[in-house]
Length: 164
Image (cartoon, rainbow, N blue to C red; front, top):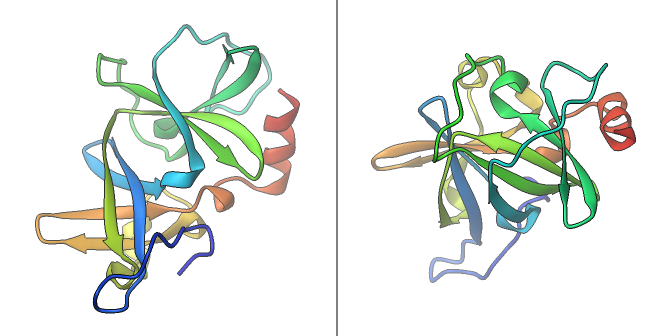
């Protein structure tokens, strides 16, 4: 299990309980550690920045701080769609830097047992870089792909995003 996940408390069976924020992207459900999420906001006007990677939509001013905005669809090589009233920006802490990630919708905060996290099969990664997938959670009615934001960008990409 990744060190990025937070132990909330132990359940009766002795497993660690972990809190995740789940979100939707292209009709699939993903989860990230709740402690990485600083806030969730509606889509503001995003200011484009020239000469940035294709997945960088631009920047926003969030209470005086300029934050790069990443399109998760573009980052994962998914088809682009128009933003709607469900579209959100999840402002998250990635290695000490705040970044905004555009997602189709934010679902809920869920608690799972650490024992529910299974390693992801290679086929699950699809367009994702395998390294950023921390595991898969198999619940009765759904599968949830657990992302490790720390591994989503190379060190060169982090330097570039930090310079925006």
